[in-house]
Image (cartoon, rainbow, N blue to C red; front, side, top):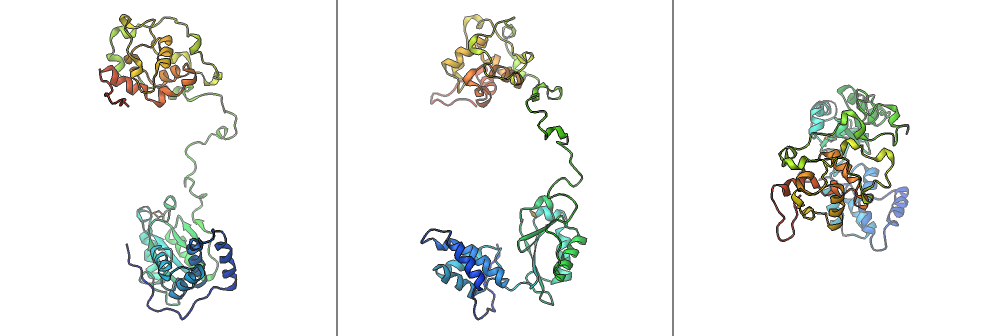
Length: 351
Ligand code: FES
C-alpha cells in the first residue's frame, strides 16, 4: 500500500462555490442531527470536482463545514485512493487499471502510451498541464478489459487506437461516449450470443410446457455403484403396488409430475420383516417414515441406490414434506447408513 501524503505545495485557501455550498447543505440534511460527519466523503468529492484535487485548505474547509477535527477528514482523504492529493491535469487525470485481467488484455500498452504522450511518471503533469495519469487497481470492469477511468466515466475494451483517440478527444474537449470502445453492447459476448439464442425462451411461449427431465439430452445419470452392491433381495420390485392415498401427487400440475419411468424399485414389505430405522436419516421423523413405508421404501440401500430422478419421483409423493429428500440429501445419508455407519450419540447426523 502506498504512502499517501499531502502535496508539499499548498494553496493559500479554499472555499466552496455558492452552488457547491448549496448542494452540500442538501447532502448534509440527509443525515440525522449530530451525524453530519457522515457527509465527509460527498463533501470531499465536491471539493475535488471543484479544484481537481484535495488540498489541505480543502480538508480544513470540509472539517469546518461538518464540525469535525481536521485529522478525521485528513484520515479519509488519505485513505481512499479516489482522492487526489496533488494537482492533476486540467483536462483529465487518467486512471489506468493495471490489475491482472487488464494486464493480460493490454494495460501495459496503455501505460506506455501514457508515458509517451502524457508524462513519464505517474502523477506528473503533462508539459501543457492538461493531463496526468496513474495506475490503479481493479476498477470492477474486468469483463471489458483493458479499461481506464476518467473522473466518473470509464472507457473500456480499449486498444492502442481507441485509447489514443480518447486522449485526442479529451484534449479537444470532445471525448468519445463512455463505456465499451468496441462495438459490443456493454459486456455482451464480443462475437455474438452463443447460448440462450432461442427467441421462444423470451416470449413466454414455452412456460410450463416441459420440465428438464422430459428432455432426452438431460436423461438421469446412472445409479450410484452402491445400488449394484445392494443385496439381491433389494431388487425385488413391488409389481404394481398402488400408491396409497397419503402419497398421491396432490396439488401438482400434470407438467410438474415426474413420469412413472423414474419410479425407483419399491418393496411390498421389508426384507425379513425387518425394516431399517429410516428415522436415522436426518430430517426423517415417524410421519415421514410411515409415508416411505407406504410407498414401499424400507431400507437404506434402497434410497442409496436412487438417482436424481428417482428421488424427485419419490419426493412428489411426500405431500407437505416435498423438498425434504433433496434438501436433506437422503441419498448421501443413506449411502453412509447402508454401510453400517450410525450417527454419534450427541445427535450428529450424517451429511
Ligand atoms: S482488472 Fe481491470 S477492471 Fe478489473
